[in-house]
Image (cartoon, rainbow, N blue to C red; front, side, top):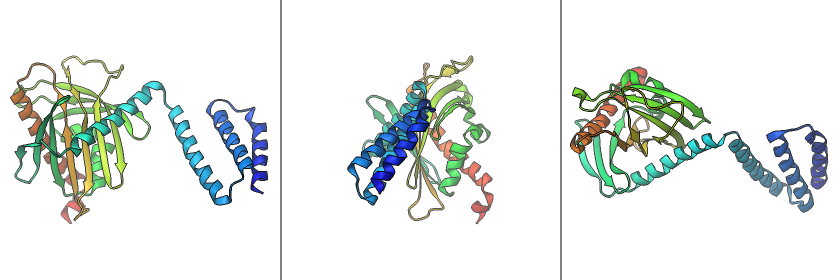
Amino acid sequence: MLPATSKLCAAISYRHLRNMTGLRRTAAVVLSHELEKLAIVGPGPSKWINHVRRRSSLLSSRLEEKLYNDTEMSYITQGEEAIKKSMSILGDQDGWKLEIVAGNGDKVLSKVLPDIGKVFKLEAVLEQPLDNVYGELVDNMEKMGEWNPNVKEVKILQKIGKDTVITHEKAAEAAGNIVGPRDFVSVRCNKRRGSTCILAGMSTRFGEMPEQKGYIRAENGPTCMVLHPLNEDHTKTKLTWLLSVDLKGWLPKSIINQVLSQTQVDFAKHLRTRVTATHPTLSQS
């Protein structure tokens, strides 16, 4: 019965195939060929169902890839590479040196990597569920300038699929104009792996956002924020922020190290204030 049905479906689809173009026709051809194979082999029902599911998943992936042009695919690849490199750095627990410990327990560590230079890692706990923190950092990304004094503006230049965006960020001048205004063009990739959220990024080139007058175009990456609920209390979120940045220009390393580590501590403080303000009921409970 099943082989006969497969042949019938293949025959019916052929009449409509002549009127299709592009991806729809390609998809129909692939599906027709798979049905013909199944008609010849004739596996049992459960095996056939699993086979179709696997092939459908593969076909969907191929079709999704065809939705993006080469430039968009290159940005997606860059975002995934930022995640890979960042998680590799965070996964190596050796060699980290303490830079700052705040009174509330937030701490910044650093180490020097051969191919990247000095990187910084913030570890902080926020008394908010993960979704609240994630929403502020991702869904409300362009509002960061409203609550973080170290950021003037974050603008999304292009969205690619559901996980990748190209952004332009303008950083505020450091206190006393120690570090002049910088800007960044970055590709960002957001992924969820179980209860863990990974927000990674790195500098990229975007033709529609050339260097801006009055700003030095700095570079970052790989950089990454990892969010996950505390095991003992899921109403709290552990934030780990890997920061790797080249501010460009001529600046003493001692000043750079001081500015970057303090920037991370300040960020955690301002983020707490923001999330508490947007979720006051939960904070008071």
